[in-house]
Image: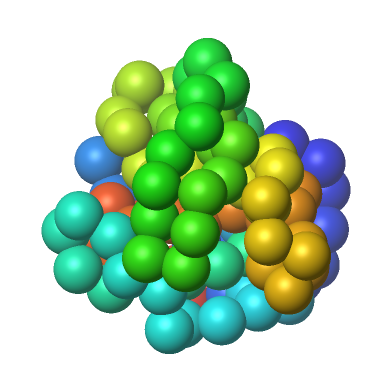
Length: 106
């Protein structure tokens, strides 16, 4: 993990592996299988799954599932490509399920 004084940060609920800084949080209005999800501009200490096209509420996207690099927990997905030009702003961003992450307070 790179050193930073940016707190609080979001960690894997399963193993407390640091995943994203609060300053990387873009939105708390996303939906996932488990319910609410957050979009981040950056994520760390993760592993990406294989690329696949997936139909979502707002259209078809090429995504890669996101896993905790430490414990392997499935956390959400990364938008790799949006087919709708209006959704291009999502490309390169990460969606992490709220039930899978924990907000550390320092």
